[in-house]
Image (cartoon, rainbow, N blue to C red; front, side, top):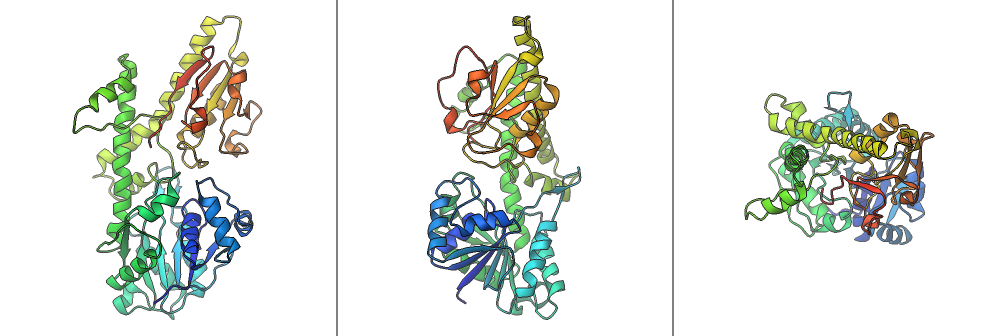
Length: 419
C-alpha cells in the first residue's frame, strides 16, 4: 500500500521531528497532541522545543501544506505513537498510561489496512499490550495477536535511536529496528520508514526483541557512564585528577572510558535501564548497580558544593552563607538543548535551593523561564550570572560557556560534554 497520510501521536522531542521528516518528503502528515499551545505553535510554522534545523523544516512543511497539528485523532494510513513512558510510584515501575490513552484515541478512526507503530521507548511487551487495547476498543477489526498475517490492522514497534541535538541528521542516517507482530507488519513498517530513512531498516523477529534492543542500548551506555562517574568519586577521594587518569587509560588500544558528569539525565538513559530491572529484578544486578551509581552522583556533587561553600566562608569570615551568591551554569540534561527531563543538573539546583540560604543564579541560555520546581524567592534566571557570583558551578557544558573564566571567582566544574 502507499501512505498518502500519516498521523503522529505526540509532538515532542521525537514526534515532531519525525512528523517533519515525513512532511519534508511531500507526504501529508497530521500531528496530534494534547497540548493546545504546542498545536497552535506548530500550525504557525514554529516550534516549541529546541533542536537544530527543526525550525526550518517545520516552517517549510507547514507553509507547503504537508504538516498540520490538531488535538483530535483523524483517519490516516499509518499511525506513529511517540508519547512519554515515565515511571509510576517510587519503585521505577513503567507507566504505560500515555500509550494506552494514545491507542484509545486513534482506535475510533482505524480502518482495515492501517498500520500502527509504537515508537515510544517501552518495557518489553508494551507493543502487545497496545495491540490488546486497540482490539478491545475495535472488536469489529482483527489484529495480529488473533488473526496473524491476515489481520485488518498491522502493528509494529520501531524505537527511536537518536541523539538530542542531532535528531534531524540521525533520523535519516541511523539504522532502524523494525519489530512487527508478523512479517507483514514488519514489511509495511519498513516501507513506511524508507520514505526518508537512509540507514538500514533491520527487521527483528518480533516487537519484544525490538523493545529489548532499545533498552539494551541505553543500559550499555548507562553502565559505561556509571564506570566513569564511579572513577571520578574514587579519584576525588584519592586526590587524583580523574581527567588525567582517563586520558592516560584511554591510550590503551582497547580502552575507551567515557567522561564523568553530574549524573545521567534524559528520558532514555536515565529511565530505560529501570524497565529491564523492573521485569527481571533478580537477574539485572549490574544494570541496577549502574543506575544506583548514576542516581547517586547528584548527591555527591551537592556534597562537594557545600564543602566548597564552607571553605569559602572560612576564607571570608566577614560573610555568612546568606551573603554568598552561587551561579549554576546549565540545568538541561545535556549540552545545547532545552530538554529538562530527568536532568541531574536541575535536580542539583533544586536541592541546593532547599539547603543553601544564599542567592542562586541560574545561567541557562536554552530556556526563557525557570521550571516550576525552581520558582522561589532565592533563585533567578540571569544569563550574566558571573557578574554577581562568588562561586560558579558548571553543570552543563553549553557552547555559550566555552569562554575564558574569571579567575577571581571560584569555579567548580562537574560538567560532561559527552552523554
